[in-house]
Image (cartoon, rainbow, N blue to C red):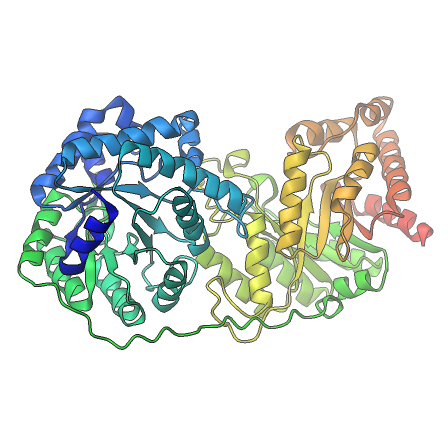
Length: 614
């Protein structure tokens, strides 16, 4: 069917989409760990039969079973090389089920990864992945495209641009929202409407995330702000686990009632997302028959919402550590691992000694190697209050979703902590609770972008937060990464996002470190080198084999093998650390010293070496 036919039909009719493909696949006994998109190849008759049930229920449009059929998501299941086959097959299966009487919408969802500025995947790579999927759907014979369930409007735009480079078929662009009515990135419905209007798809709307009531509230806020047709496809309420099965408990009658309300609000396209079976679509078809399409007669006035970003605070005013670095002083920081329990007395004693020996800041890691310990935020606050030395809070993405991250960052700043080292975090399977789940809504690159937004007085959605934060933004870099090109590329993204200082993994291989200097020495970026004073051969072997991102050269291992006593080992470790500090002193702005096994006397000797360098 030609593009003009669908849009002409839409002018005078309410269009009904089908319901949840995933819910129906699950109901047919396919476990959630399967790749549902690949069923287009291995079980095409199952997918065709599900489409037919929606045809019988009265749907005008069938969505292809290709929501997650992009190269990134398929690769997780081992099908990354079958993007074209899976998408083309999905379109052909839907066409055969719907015949020439129904329209076929090519379903494209998010990539399942973060793209710039929230992650390491570039806009170009994202567009290429979306274009690869869209091209295959075109070849399979779709009539239109539906870009659905996007949390990040920036990613949605890349999908839209990809489709636009290939064809002029109509596009439905849909964001998802959460229980507060905003997108997961914090965009309110008004801003969603404004952004989608600017990018000019033929139809804009919302789907997934919430049930019909919250979606209706959001739709009412969007409707006065656009002349474009609106689409709305809610879940069947919120999911519940009942005897091991995921069920949606809102009834088809309840959904039908809200279908009427959607139409009265101005929706021209309605359908269902998670939990909506053919029974729901049949009930919604009845609701459409009971109403004539309602003409919206509203005065359209698109607001010019300018995101007011405040100037960043000068770096030297952010913290004492920042002030020292800007002044050109060689800084000394020491890593102090939080306790396993609640007793912080030893940590405070060590911090007192370090402060007395002119250490600039205490590094407080966040559950390093995914081992359960006191949170870095809490120990940092206790050290700052009871010892009076600045901490550097290590903050990871592993344990928090975006909502939790924003909450934490606002709270950390309110507590007076300013130095932040932003890292992705070790996965839980490395640690002592391997069954724990990780979140990783964003990685360290996205986290830097989040913090820079807050430093400019706005949240992720560009909404003002009042007084801006003033974080001194730090990131990590591994000079001995297995894939140096990947590490370099990620570091460039961190700098582009706004990082101001960098702390390296422990340096043992001087030649590798010097080769990496060209990559990490950037104007205005302060470089702090990690130094781990080795205590024994066993300590060196542990770092070399069991700590991610650390490489101890064979030459150093050979030196430690010659040690006959623990005293010999400590002396060799001290000499190695001293030599490294002497050799890198002129290239870096400071050092971060590890505190192996809490051996404070050992670290004091290393600090003496630094003092002798002036």
